[in-house]
Image (cartoon, rainbow, N blue to C red):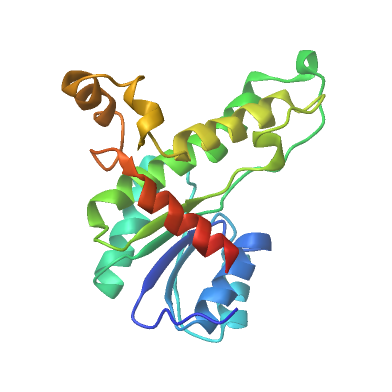
Length: 210
């Protein structure tokens, strides 16, 4: 499906291969300016070549908050704005019985898959304007457990929880959030600072039906 993202800027992590590269190509074909990062510089350069346009490139370990702050700031300095963020960087799973996993393996997956998404999102949010969007990458293992993948499953479940929207203002929630004080407390936990509306959910449903 063709899109027109001319004049928009997208930051993509994990852009050196796979889904990140394919998304970079799709966005480039749609006219979007790109800021690409990964730990693999050669892969990034190949992605830029396949995109057929000059992109911002930076070697970034998303588990390092300084790196994430730097790539977001570079995007702003280079393009003057940031419209989209695609958190795609991640460590693929390896089948290990839990008793065979190590602290180092746990830290590697958590730092990239969870902390990385958090670091980039936290750095980007202050620069986003109305109409901006962040897309985070989970996995089927973020909703369905799998033997010998406990740590990976945990990281992807975390991304689902980090990304899911909060309360929606519907009659069925009126009993759960009775009174203005309960509503105010719930709204503190929502990124928008307010409850979502049924109409906003309807917009998403219609979009998915296109």
